[in-house]
Structure formats: C-alpha cells, structure tokens
Image 1 (cartoon, one colour):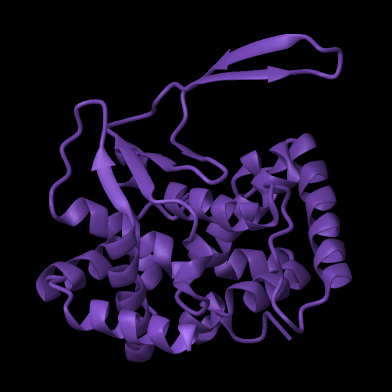
Image 2 (cartoon, one colour):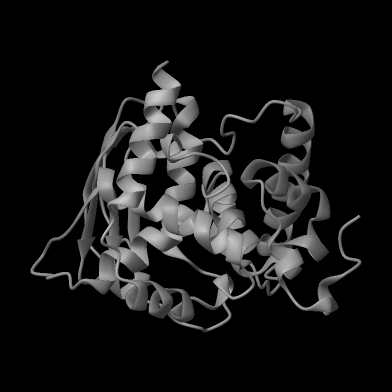
Length: 263
C-alpha cells in the first residue's frame, strides 16, 4: 500500500514539474559525458532530477547567488549516478551548499595517540554523513578538459558509499552482486594504482584516488562516467563491478571504438 502511494506521489510531482525544457536541453549539451544517453535514459534522468530538486534544497553561500541554471547543472550530475537505481539512495538529508570557489572547513580529529589535530585545507567538495553536500561552483561549472575530474560525481559517490554507515569504498550492493568479487576487484585495483602513483607513473585517472579506499571508490566513479574507456582498459574487473552497481555501462555509450574492451 505504501509503495503504491509512493509511486503515485512521485508521478504527481513529475507531472506538476515546471522544469524548463530549453534549460534542460542546454544543461545536457554542456556536459559532454551525457552525449551518449539514449532518449529513454534522458527521460529517466529528467524524472530523477525533478524528484531530486523537489526534495533537496540547493543554495549559495559565501556570497554566491545561484541563477536558474546552476542548481540544474548540479542535480543532473548528481542524479546520473542513481538514474537506474532510486531517488531514495539520496534519502536522509536535504541540503546542497554551494560556495563560489574552494572553501576552508575547520576539521578536528584525534589520532591513535589521543592527540587532537586541527586541519584547515581548501576543498572543492565535501559530503557529510547524514548531512549536506558542499561544493565549490568554480569546480562544478561544466568544462570539457578530458581530465575525468568531476566534483559532483565524486561527492555524491561518497553519499552512496556512506549508506553502509561510513565511507569505506564498500557501498551497499544490490541483490545478485557478490561481496567477495567486489572486494577483490577493488583491492587489486587499489593496490596496483597505489603502486603506479608511488612510482610517479603518469595516470589518466586522478592520483587522489590513493588517499583511501573511500577516495578510490569516489575517484573511480568519476572516471567510470567520464573516462570509461580508461577504466575498462586498465581495470576491467573493477569496471564490471561498477557497471553492476550503477546499473549502467558508460562504455557502451561511446563510439564503436570502445567495443571489445570488456568481456
């Protein structure tokens, strides 16, 4: 009964949406990694975005005033991750805070010896457990530099990772996915990528991934959507796990050149 009501309410929200069609098309055109979406995928993404914008508050901070296009740019990228999952993957929090540029949070932590440390370092994004997502607009603004760095995908991947209670590179897997296969694929790729970065090997994937398993999952999620050919070629087993988790295959959206990289 409750599920039927939820479906009815979502249909009602979508039907009553005032999302501007021209602005929607403009936003999709600004994000090159969306170019391969089919018409059905675009529609699923649009409906997910409408629900996201209905449930979340996106507002500027630090003097930033958001125009009509800016929340949509954020929502589209955030919802790409869950367009084949469910909007409830982002349940339990309501706020996205956007600063004009990098922000400097004051972080405090206690090390193994009980010593309290305070850290103040500029950040482009931050995701809090059961709290807001914080973003730098300077890093969110669409660009086509081919570097595969996407702060929105990164921080919202952290949100998915936290659904198990902590960000550790092990989000809740779907029925039919194998925990051992996930762990093995990520452990092997993480070890290899850490070795490559440690050897000062130049990589197309952001070296920040070596910071922790949580950062590795978030960075690999960025690369999965923006550089699928690279992830599939370098870490095909990991790519296959991400494909199962996100229920998407970005590689298949690329030109025929991509065929044959994944078995």
